[in-house]
Length: 340
Image 1 (cartoon, helix red, strand yellow):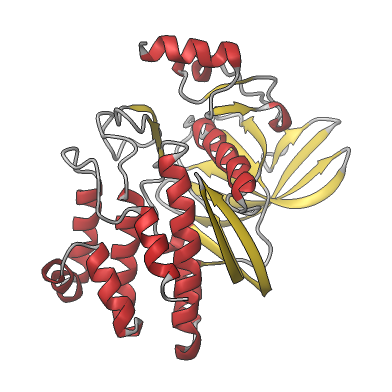
Image 2: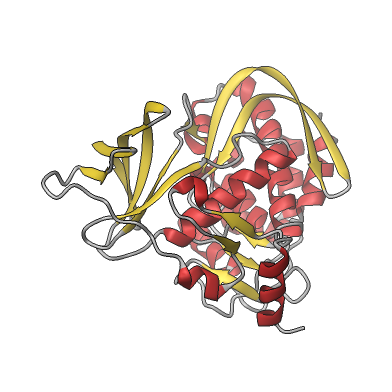
């Protein structure tokens, strides 16, 4: 069956694992993320205030007002905004593109899709919930999402961890991240393609027993931390059998980049952690990292030239000749479980 035929059947039966509804986000439409025709058909509403640029949505039933810009990077702004609906008022985060006219519609769809699936397998805060997708007067398509209260980025969390807590923090986070990557890769056919410590949020809490269900495996852990994956602007969705991409959100990676690549996301994450935190890893964990990253010679290069080796990691992650990395999520899960 051709890809187009598969997409049609998916839409008719609504059984595709990539099916997503936009109803709760202000758009009366639902469909399969693998269907390019459905994605092109989506009409994003535009109701900004004519007189107040800071009012992104100005409707009787929905009001969204920017309070301040929290941060910005190469690809987008993050605003804090007040979101008012019939259910009440609260502060939310808004992601806006840097360039006028650019659309973040696909990123919002993927993020909401991941949010719902992460909840299903035991990660209620696995990705921020998307609340609204809207268009501004400059034709930019933005989205509002739930904030993660009390969160910090994982790299800042590791940086602030004491020597006595660093090892247990690393084990806890590695186990959860590997379980996430296992599900995204094997079940959803999705690669994040920018799985860095700065693209995870972490919240500390009292010890909590978590049961994660990945394929036919049940993973039980006792954890003091909850992780949230953010920033899906580089992600792709494809076939786990053919590795042909149906949806690619980034122009950094070519359209012919195989997707998903088994172990790609963890290869990038583990390499960046090894480079930045080698001196703080206990000997046993250093040995595991070097096995996951396929050898001591490569790891020696990483330690000696941190910045160039980070660029090299991204180059390898995007190498179209490579469809599989040794840093397979199920392998990492089993290795990390042996440390507990």
